Amino acid sequence: MKRIKGTYLVLIAILGVAAILTGCSSDGNVDLGPGPDGGPPAVVLGTAGNYVILAKTTVTNVPTSDITGDLGLSPAATSFYEGFSQVMAGDHATAAQVTGFLYASDMAVPTPANLTTAVADMEAAYTAAAGVAPDVTELGAGEIGGLVIEPGVYKWGTPVTISTDVTLWGSDTATWIFQMPGTLFLAAATDVILAGGALPENVIWQVGSSVALGTTSHFEGTILAQTAIVLATGATLNGRVLAQSAVALDGNTVVDPLK
Image 1 (cartoon, rainbow, N blue to C red):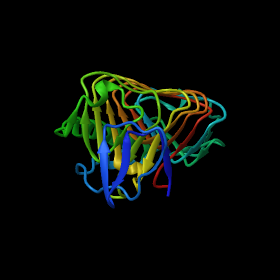
Image 2 (tube, one colour):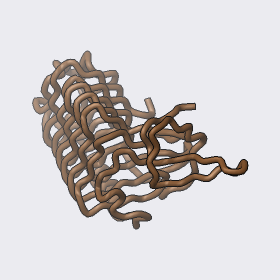
Image 3 (cartoon, rainbow, N blue to C red):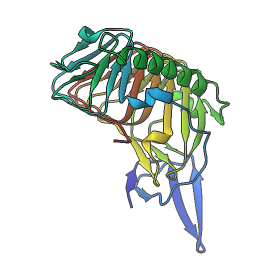
């Protein structure tokens, strides 16, 4: 059973009865146990879910990254993949840093049409995620570091910052949608942690601006961003990076959660 440090969940046993108090700080390790069910209906990614990284303008990379899953780039062409040393193979390309294929809009059919559909599905998923009614608004006034967050829909009118580890606690069927019109920033050496059986494919981060994941940080879930997604040196991600503009990598590990 994974133990989490510095959460906002305290487990207290009084007269043999366990009480769970949220919003309280804890200085020790807490065994959260099996997570609760619940949350919103899953956001449908459509064919955008076939890609671990999908962007419209550029995917840049400072080697060496380690990516598991397929990459898509459209309407930009193959030349807007930078730092991969890709090898063309008709309707796709390969690269030593990618366990999977790279696709771009100027490759052989059916890739151009497939990517057009995937980008449209990405935009539709973004709109759908943004339109779900929230359960909680303005959690932590935009600073969610140190919290344990149960399944549900969370919305902010401000940028969101994660300055210390945050834990998403739920079962393997639990779902989360995080909605924000501004930026999302994960501090360096800070983790998004899944506990209680929670799965990264069940977590959606809908971001109306840019996303920055700090140096050696770790992130979980699918990011649907309206602008750029930037992973600083050594950051890792278990999920998907779906940007309506650019994606920038720098020696990162990015893994499709279903691979």
